[in-house]
Amino acid sequence: MAALDSHPNIEIRIFNPFYRGAAGRLWSGLTDLSRINRRMHTKTFTVDNQVTVIGGRNIADEYFGARVDAKFGDLDVVGVGNIAKDVSGMFDRFWEHETALPVPAFAIMPDDPVAELVTVRERLAKSREEIKDTKYAGAVVAKALEFLNEDADVLDWAPYQLVYDSPDKGIKSKAGPSAAITPKLVEALKSAEKELIILSPYFVPRKAGIEIFSELQARGVEVTIVTNSLAANNQITVHGGYAPSRKPLLEKGIQIYEVRPDADILGTEIVAASGAKATMHTKAFLVDRSKVFIGSFNFDPRSANLNTESGVIIHSGQMSSMFGDNVDAGLKAQTYELFLYEDRKLRWRGFEDGREVIYRKEPQSTWGQRFMAGFMRLMPIRGQL
Image 1 (cartoon, helix red, strand yellow):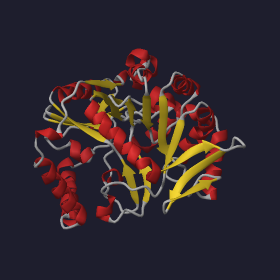
Image 2: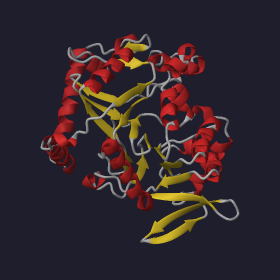
Image 3: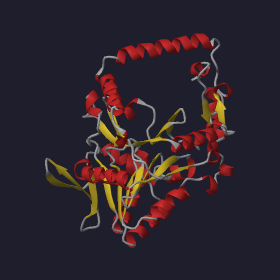
Image 4: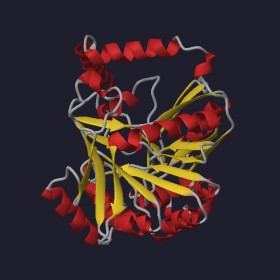
């Protein structure tokens, strides 16, 4: 980052960084945890204030189907026009915020930034040469051309509401309701009259969240939760925080589905990653098949209270129906359905080769995973998950 920042056309700022150097990181952790525990989780990508991508995808190989040992399922939305300008305005608020520091303010800069930049260019050139003739590179080109050849009908023009946390949320003294995304999301959730579908890889509803879902279910809204199974989850700690909420939700009639570790992720077959562990990373919800939220917000305490998050609520029957139909089509083959058995114990319903199978314990999980998840349930850390 220090080398890139020395490039005349590249600027990098870091939101709420540790203090300088290894000793600074240790000192920050010991003396300033309440500050550095607040992270920017917002994810957007905007070009020329004309086109923007909003979602929950990080910039790393596993989020782009470029690893053979991991496959993440994500969801983004591409926006053009005013939404791009709105997202750019949000970016400016973060860029100009007092907690967003330029790299030289906290990093140890290279003695010879020009030479360091040459080294970076050489590494990039080597990497580009290595990937040039791979199946993945070919797929990227093919998908780009496929998109460019689409006509205008590929876009659905629709009203929207950009929602995001203020960068002030990164400062404990300023992290009040006015800085938060949650009131707008709760308002959208409570507007449901018939159906609510939530996809959240890390789902840790506390008492207030369980009450909201229960109230919706009680007034006739069909509430469906889709999250990761223990075997699919890349955060066992989070699964330990989520597990206690399953029985109370099921008792209220709420449907819960957990994504299988062998679920199909579109595109991963390109790099022969089909056999890798699948992890759902999509963060979205659907209200009455009339509006859909796509963004970075997980239904957990960290997204609600600590991290800054962003997303867009899109009012589109066409897009919502497409999203809902895709969820419906994947539930049976790609997830385990949770239910309470006659003894009020949890059971998982799955299908193997078209045959229904009932599991008495977390399917496809190891003893070690179950032990760690159970141990984490005992730890007083749910507010940090």
